[in-house]
Image (cartoon, rainbow, N blue to C red; front, side, top):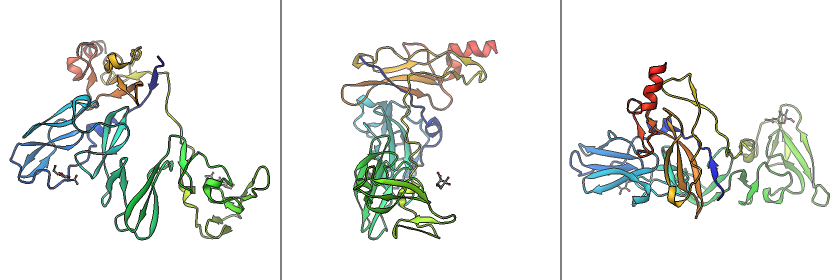
Length: 343
Ligand SMILES: *[C@@H]1O[C@H](CO)[C@@H](O)[C@H](O)[C@H]1NC(C)=O
Ligand SMILES: *[C@@H]1O[C@H](CO)[C@@H](O)[C@H](O)[C@H]1NC(C)=O
């Protein structure tokens, strides 16, 4: 079986401290003191004075918050949870103001939509409220995801694959844009260079190739995408704000050395990822001695299984005891004690 190794360095700072404040005013309304609720997929909270208090431990990657009794919640493995399963980024099941980051079917972060926005679909935070007419919003700097608002209402979200962008006709094209492409709706005459606002092409569909250029506008001028001429004052095509250069897939089969939390200058050799990752070996595996990283074997899409690099939150390290595959305090991990003694 082909083993896909996806190196995903998680934003553990987000897990440790950066999870959003629980702002849902109705979550603890008429709920008794000390009763527990799920504030988000990763945040069990305790209700105090009818307000949510984020004082309980956050859920580790691979587990999510679950209401296990009427007044008690717990972090349970995703497979046994009734909510917060994911295959890609989505809205938090407990709070519509939050979007969750999903890596290989594991929720790794919870992000608050900006004030005035709400999570609507595929984890997109919509800023439609209050807009008039038809407005397009790109969700990310690579312009891979776009949605539109019409009269303040969200519609027509497009999500393209890694390395692609949403063309002007709403289809997905390979990044960076091809000059004079039909999908970008300018095929004849002067057309903007979608990668640089000071440049343009001359397009002629009867020629091969159809694009001549790029040409540069005179200094201190930009290409105005409404008039299709160079001019002072920059009325740049919205696509020129897209970052097409960083549309790079971060997959790799090699590992780099990491240093430990205890002996931060010591470079340790790493355990190799679990050689077999399949339905029978789904779980977490140590990465190296006294190391916050660990390997997670997870079901990917369909019947494929992937190995994902994970990291323990809150300064914890991953236990090298194969019978106890969890994040532990460094003081409980023998390999950390060995380092502490040596250094
Ligand atoms: C706030 O919590 C209540 C009770 O759990 C829930 O019904 C409601 O949808 C939540 N509000 C938002 C904005 O998610
Ligand atoms: C845009 O094009 C101009 C003119 O060719 C060039 O000087 C400038 O460096 C380009 N900008 C970027 C960000 O590539």
